[in-house]
Each structure stands twice: as structure tokens, then as C-alpha cells.
Length: 185
Image (cartoon, rainbow, N blue to C red; front, side, top):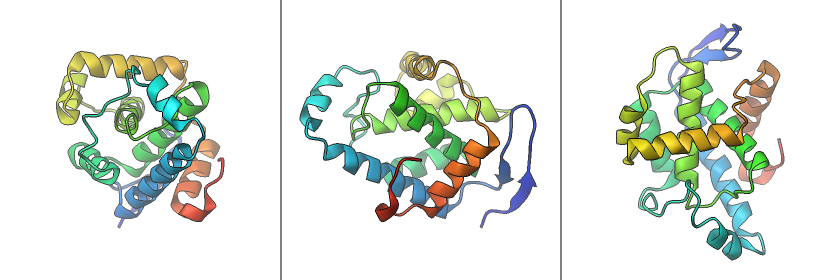
């Protein structure tokens, strides 16, 4: 069970720190992402979207062997993530979807999620590994990970700051999430 260490409010952190990511949060994030993917699959032009996004840097068929939940657990296992890292990664992912023309699919969710987690780690953790290490975890070339990171940052206009209110809103939404209450945050 996560231990709440109280709020931290510095120039970089405005989150309640807890111990490492808990299973409840991982399950909720999985449900949230699966819900997004299912919603997107219902779009009338979904097949056209898949074709149009085929050449996106974030698209990949090589991760399809790993379920999304296993992928989230895999990321957690190798990075020993705090809860706030996963929540801020979801915020970055949502921002990305709003700012880009890319729709989340089973072909891009793995790279987008991992890159969002990477940005969150680099923005909110004092100690982190270099991209070479992270590229080995995900099984892609370092050069490709650098491009993924730069592409995501560019689409986000390099704006990674998250207010405490925005963080708390997403945190509550994710923890309260179930498949029947999917709505815009």
C-alpha cells in the first residue's frame, strides 16, 4: 500500500509523494487507456486513421505481442515509478492527443505511453538514467527514442509544467475511473 508522505510544492513538484506505484493505480490507468482505445475504435473512419498514421514515428506493430497491462507493469518494474510519474505521464498523453492529429490506437499506445513516462521521469525526478538505458528497456534504438522524445516535446510545445489543481483533477479522475464514467477531464 502506498504511504502518503504529504504534499510537496516546489518549483518542480506540486504533488503528494507516495511510495512506489501501487497496483490500484496501474489497474486504473490500464482501464482508462483501454477505454480510450475502445472509444477510438468506434470512430467511423478508424480504418482510415490507422492507414493515415501508418508512417507516424509512434506507430509500431512490434509491441503488439505485449498486452497494454503487461507493458505498464513492465515499465513500472524497470523504473520503479512513483504514482505521480504515471499520473503526469497520462496528463502528457492527453495533452498530446489534444494538440496533435494522432488518435490513440493499439499501434501507437506503447511508444506514446513510454515516451510520456520518460518525459515525466526527466521532468520530475532528480535522478534518472540516460536515453540509452531507457531505449534498452523498451527494445528500440537510442536514436529512435531520442526522436520520439523530441517529437512528443515538440507537439507539447515543450510545456511540461502541471499545476497542482490539474494534477489533483487527473489523479482523482484516474482513481475514480471505471468503464462507465469515461468523460472528458
